[in-house]
Length: 302
Image: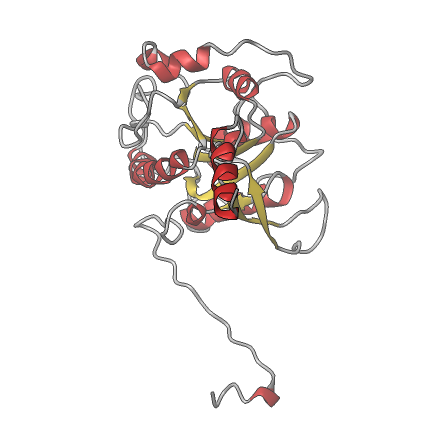
């Protein structure tokens, strides 16, 4: 038997064998994270850490939190509509790489009662947990107070009369049959059924639902999941007239930094799509670059 025939035979066996060469798991996600670990009461700014981590897409889910079709206040609703288009592009790319997509437009499950993705989520059996699945308020033992004052609800304009108007997820985000649609504790049941260990949170609003929901950052961290926030696919409910009286977009940045200090790392959509981090059209802040060099390098001449 010549050597070429032996090689071809071995290759064929690898292809045909269960778990062989053609039954390869999806390529790992390579994620570039940012964090700034801090402790309650710590003085001074913590060191910013940049790390590259590898996650198995088959054990990873993206949860899209409360990206509703409308809201009681037009200003944040318009931002959500803009964000929804960017989120759809990101989750399409993530889905193509084997990531599970979970849509969580809280309080609107009746709209999806017959959708295959909703049926799929509801099929997950209940599981017991060491900590209750519930709304998780700010934890003073683990985190400092939020860096923005949202005690006015975060609203930046007049509110519509009547009950909350949202009825579904924003239609700009496509929901596929292989996705899941869920609300509250049932999302955790689905994560456990699917063997998902890694979660990326995106959606709105970071200072409220993204942190506090029963499927939010605090809850999933308490339950031992590996959690990240996609910091350029989120927004805050913050009125710039309230302390610290910075722009709305800077207020969101401050909340993201709070998450990076006390809860979990963050990343951007650039790990999934070939685009720069998403930026709202209304964010007109300028970037300032500082260039520093030693005199003996003659950098001013080169």
